[in-house]
Image (cartoon, rainbow, N blue to C red; front, top):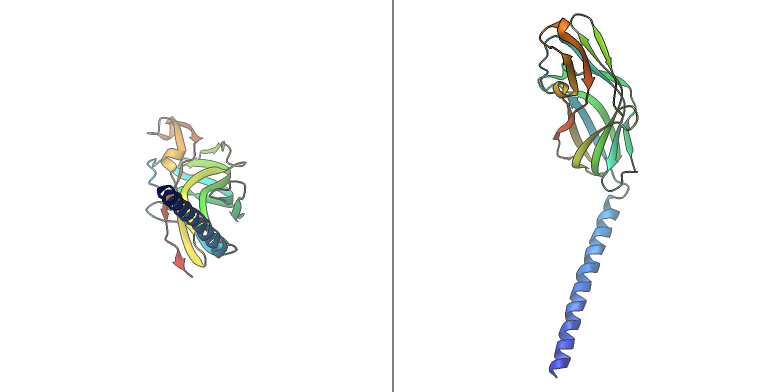
Length: 201
């Protein structure tokens, strides 16, 4: 009798575990089905941290394309902008932002943003211009990790990027005088500064 009771108890445990497993799978399938085909709106902004070099007239980057990479599928790249625009990052100080993209795309979680940069240049106040080499910027783009940025279905999501001039444009020479500056190295540092909570549309 005891052996039969133990067998019955083990059978109940097995049924319970299977119910939890299949129940979880069903909930996941339902969630995927509920968001499949849904779309949300993304507004993407660009800004800059303070730039310490008062001898610089402009620090320019020309962006030709912006891509988003979905979480879990790095091959399914979503292009959110193909408009070529040149930004003087010094104009984006003190919390000023420039709209980089405003578009609708598939709702979901995105892990990475890529800025395709065609060229970068620094112009000093004495008129000298330094055209800089862009490392991989025109091919694979400047990669910005987003740590699970969500675009909600039928909602508005915002994202602001900080293109840090003081770290991205590395002065060569003595920055205390114009004659002491011999050039710049372009080592782009871009961070997601803030993400907006999706708002219902």
